[in-house]
Length: 80
Length: 80
Length: 152
Length: 152
Image (cartoon, rainbow over all chains, first blue to last red; front, side, top):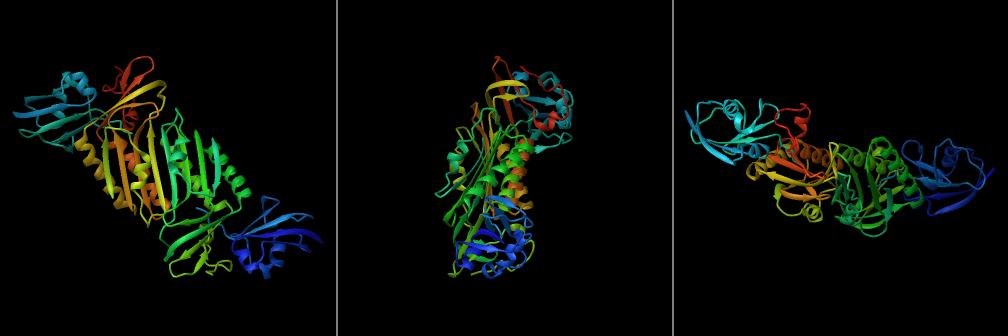
């Protein structure tokens, strides 16, 4: 079990109804974590259009998770 | 014989020492005229790097000449 | 100079271009993204930009450094707005100076393309009809519709 | 708007960009050509531009119309200086607005490329060493040296 902080942005934040939460998870990768939080962000496969960052560094969906990580879940970006 | 006005620009004007001249020429094309004025502009083959305009319209070097034409001789351009 | 900023207030393009002056520069190319009155067939009246600034700055700097390593330029500056913008407002400004124009054109284009793909920035459009929606990124649009996209 | 001007006085890029504002526009790309302190290995201190204005305007308009027929843009404006410029001065400005950025980038580049090739404009450089010379066009430079080119 890993203890994390998860932060939701933009559409994900609106759907989750919260900015962030602390949780304990059995997920071992960012992708597993994302799937376990489908009730929050209401999104299936994030790969290709959603991004994840861990501790303010862009990460891959197969990145491992560690205690005290801050995981940022980004819906499709639209700058410019 | 054709009676023309010839105008010299930039480097050609400096070399010719005059802005323009009226002359009567046996040349039948712009290219023939250019070659006949080599003592003014001091340039051999103008094709590819020099331009010619007749009566304020860009022309080809093989354009025919007519009485009262105003022929503009342009050394290599360098705008921008 | 290779610099990216996130501005909460209006972008001043003239001040930004003057900040890029360099005696060795022969070319300045700038890109400005403006809020236009339509997007994907909807009439737009305003926008909100949400920016996660710490990563927008670090990703932006990475983009500028990568482009400057690839293309010989003298300086580049990119600025993106956060917060509310009205029609006609300047959402993003990119300026590049170089000795010759080819490099400035290529680098400016590469920077704005990467900014749009990589920076953690989200755009919520407010439509004339009264509803609103989060805008998908360009890469995602090429995937067609997906579950993460809905007008709300 | 598709417009070309020859200015005898300083170009004001900020006024020009504001003149291109359009509610349907999402992208503005501008190019500025600045007098840089070196050219082909020589240190430059100033420049004179000689322009044959009647043909510069008609050829410029032909270029703008051709580009706008080829690339869907909303407006384009090009301005070239005549007369004396100092280091850092703005010699030429081109601005293009379009709904999306690709068109503005491509059209702006095409316009400045054609301006440099086709407009009857000549540039005399004054060097730090005290001499001066007429600058060849880019197309001609690719022919190597020719009898019409000499530093005077």
